[in-house]
Image 1 (spheres, rainbow, N blue to C red):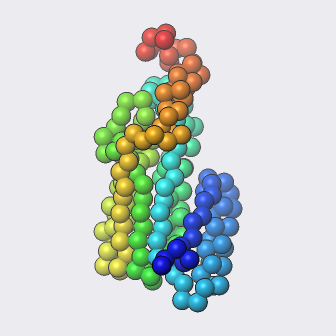
Image 2: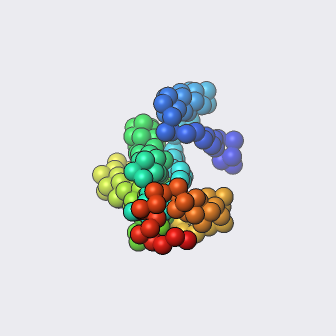
Image 3: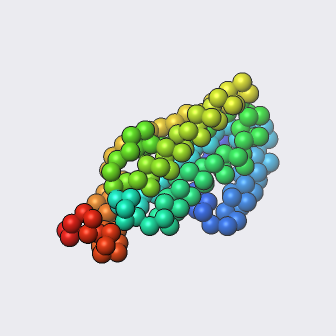
Length: 171
């Protein structure tokens, strides 16, 4: 069975030093198990900062892009030589909103769209090397992130400056 050889790691790649720490952990696992390789990488990060573009501050876009796009890019880049050597696979979890923007979710749609394009480029550039790249396009799911969406949307609305909220009405 594969279970004894399968390892799962989590970490906040928006924090300094996390990528180096994760790299050291993965390298340690590979070194301790004779013949072990890094065959797969699943980038399943997800963050949503709901709100209309007019009243969503740039910082919300920046954070969402760090989690949903830049962290997977950094992780893939760090482990790409190992994944290519193993002729392994990268799986990037995107979203249907990466294909079709959903009003009120612009930050996540932008970040997941970027991850879609990155995945396409990575697939084209590494297929001849034996690396497989897949995307999983999720939609609305019953997860803590999904279940809090409308609550967080309202919070963002009321946190917006009155002149921005006024564009959409008072309630």
